[in-house]
Image 1 (cartoon, rainbow, N blue to C red):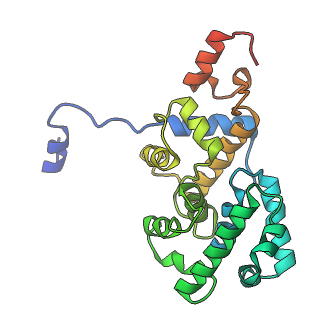
Image 2 (cartoon, helix red, strand yellow):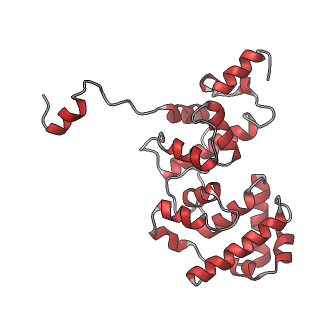
Image 3 (tube, helix red, strand yellow):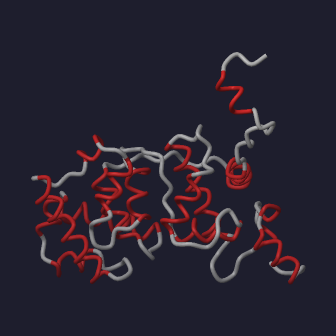
Length: 248
């Protein structure tokens, strides 16, 4: 028996509400079974994460970590990095891709953060909504949805967001979870089907799993579809196996 008008209105058409989209849960489960539990991240403060993410574009993870460690050792604090010359910064980040461009972006961003807030920190962002934080961060040169997503999700801010790096973007598009689009649009579409129960930490873990798949199996040039734990769910993988049944 219906106890209120709301229930009657919701179901008066005779159709039940659609079930929640369970694709991301299934993908997460399969990747956990294949790769195992991921090491929990020890979140950095937002500024340190910002610096790492700005440098990480088109650069291997281990290389970027090594460069950030080198920056800490050489400059001691981010204020000293900000005040260094462009030549000094470029030399210090020489192992990342496009160091000349990133040195300009990094120094300019650190100076502008200081100018706007009065000191070099991003801790103040914790008082704002996630969408406002991301819009603010994306004003800086070289900062797009990938970097802003990383800062709000991976740092001590710990907000619900997806970091759509090249690996994550490639995997979800091959799976057919979204139509081909840029990182911002793809993230917006994925967020509509992310389970409401997923915390920021769970979304971080999911990113780690998907990225690992993209780095080792669902690679850009030579995807190993036959080895992939998601091949049964993957439109691209099914097409590849149909064309080349004996392929990798």
